[in-house]
Image (cartoon, rainbow over all chains, first blue to last red; front, side, top):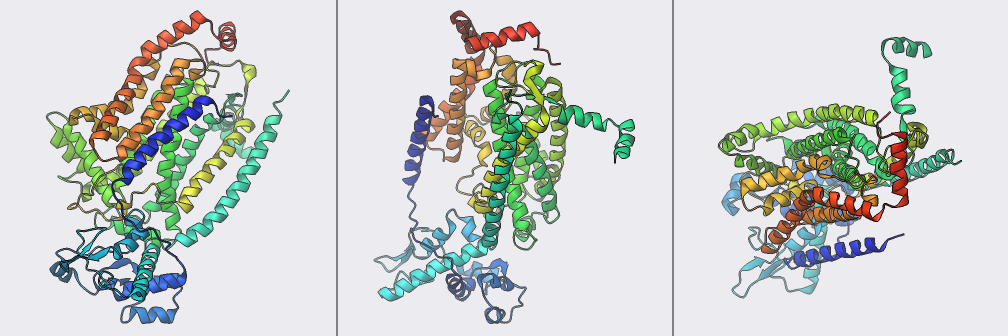
Length: 221
Length: 409
């Protein structure tokens, strides 16, 4: 039973929000829309790219090597990845702060939480990695974040071979997937537990509803 | 067992308290589900205190350790992620429940005699809750935590003559820093217990004047039913529905209420592009920004929170049943609610010409609703009495006069 006045109210509110969102849309976000898959294969490929390229300059200080078991790596694979590091060591950059400062004039941001530190983080990381373009004068800019100090690590802007470009795009997707995992490694455990909690609550609430109905029947004359 | 209770009863009124205030406590039978939200607020308070105490066991209130310790809770502590997300979502749930509780009071006119003290202790609870939430938001020591605290504490600088001194006194330093974090932690731990104390006063007042009800007058004894089992079970069912919504956010969308920016550690040298408070402060923040003068803005913001306390004086109508039988008041109520939503949306937007104007219009409507209420409520009552009240209302008023049940028994 929705009254006419309520319908009018809802219409008015929707109008307000539509004006708002169309205005927000004109602010110009250039995120690429793409399906980022979070299968173990994707995460492990992403991890390889991150370990080989990103950690040259970036820390992932909240991730320890032993945590990589969470994306399905075996103890031997983790040993290979960590090299001389201990399993309980955090994943740190191969450069120290001084070297970073000399190279970029700033300390590079830690990547462990990056996928949560930007809105729509995984899409943002994926888009950022592929937003590099070579201009006519040969300089390369990042269209998504022009002030960025990071070079085109994947060399996407100068690659013309279509097959290589597809591989790079896949790598960018997998890096985004891996960083989404490092930012929220408990996501899967949380969702699994959440399903049980919800099922329990639905049954409990339904039973409480029945008890309530039955109790209140006593008041009927 | 009964001997133990007997022993206690001779020394402390345990059985009679349980009987009088929990079991037989007379409650109007016509209470709708809108009357569930006080109980829900109490539940969330307990939930916040329990999760908060467990968080405090692993949290470090130190500017160099705070952010890392929160991440430690998220990754290393057993079910730390669950406790932290319960606490973070719990803060939003608390405000949602309290705002609905307030809206119900406004709609049904439950703030009117003899319940003014309930409304005013509620106002004190709202202030204490806001202070607690604000200080708690600094503790994760993210970018938004830091800059939010920076902005809000600097507002006190608008105080004439001693503004700068007050800001330094609040922060414990010249800028928000380690001293601020440590004192906010101490006070964030203290305030919930002050809230508990005010809740007890709120409940003692409630059990003296009894619950209001949708008809707007005190009902005769035959219309009251014992609290247990009727309202214990009704409240528990409401709690189930609440927990389903709450758990959706905790388990499937826990970062919904957390600004992405706050997952970056606080950096005093880098101001975020635009600083947004938590959603529950947005309408008041929008009012602050709508006034061109800083001192004026701070006063308007303070007034916008405190003005609710004036409601028992502003509403001059004696028509019972709140907005139900009062068309003008009902229209004002809905306009006010929409206005608050609009203000909240304006609060999220950067200050462009358009949003400044929208914010200013909404601010004027916000205060106009309160300023016009004395005149409109008087006028409305006169008109309604001239036209003749609906038979139901006449019946209610006559019944009230006959059995004199305006006085709580």
